[in-house]
Amino acid sequence: MSGRSDRTRELYRDTVKPLREPLGDIKLRELTAGDVQQTLDALADRLSTRTLQILRNCLERAIRHAEVRDLVGRNVAAVVKPPRGTAGRPSKSLTLEQAQALLQAARDSRLHAYVVLSVMTGLRTEELRALRWNEVDLDAGVVAVYRSVRITGDTKTRKSRRVLGLPQLVVQALSEQHKLQAAERLKAGALWQDHGLVFASSVGTPLDRHNVLREFRKITETAGLGTDWVPRELRHTFVSLLSSDGMPIEDIADLVGHKGTVTTETVYWKVIVPELRRGAEVMDRLFS
Image 1 (cartoon, one colour):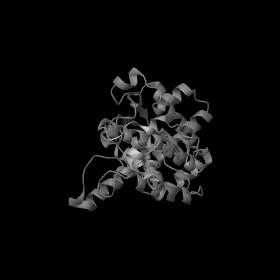
Image 2 (spheres, helix red, strand yellow):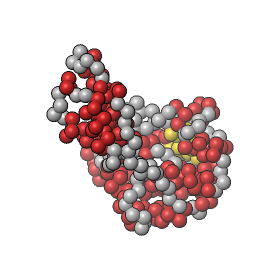
Image 3 (cartoon, one colour):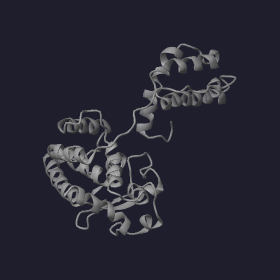
Image 4 (tube, helix red, strand yellow):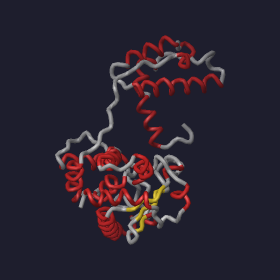
């Protein structure tokens, strides 16, 4: 797992747990392809197809290390085909009315600006948690998205690097966030850890994704939406709202970083090309 992010390592550790009971007591030299296939087949009625693929891949990689050290004769997982599992939970998006209710419910939360920025700009959760104040210009109403909490510190892809215009509601929410953080910094005193983050804990440290999820679900519950939503679905909401408003898919792809251009990667971050301002214009109109 060298070079993997903490999130990826955690995901894989949790994912392989179902293998421990059926296979944990079998010596590696005695493990057969039949054992692996039988185990995966038995898990197919409660795990998704993607999870079963990850289980098989993790086991294959682990045995490959043993092969290199001549501890096994062959990689029995390599010849196994993972079965089709249950359907994974599909991502969903909020309607405009639900999004409005969510923003209202978030007003009294420390995640207010986080939620507003996510709904109205489509930033990834990993980009939001890495965002720094020196990448935000409230006077110009722009944000530069050049980093994430991935282990490299860079965005998901080079094409994800982009500069976005901010809707007025986002500018207002970030201004309030700046004031809130200044008050927390004063209260924390010597305990404050300055990472320059827009979204941080009450002592300045990076936000943990678990804490974000718990607070986010409190907001969705308050908004009458239940607790089965996750923060990344606000990005889906952003795409859905723009699409419903008639924006071409090519422009939406630019805004969410799926399709970048040389211009967005080379211009000064305070400069906005027309295409990247259009998302802010739509959101200003929808949420005015």
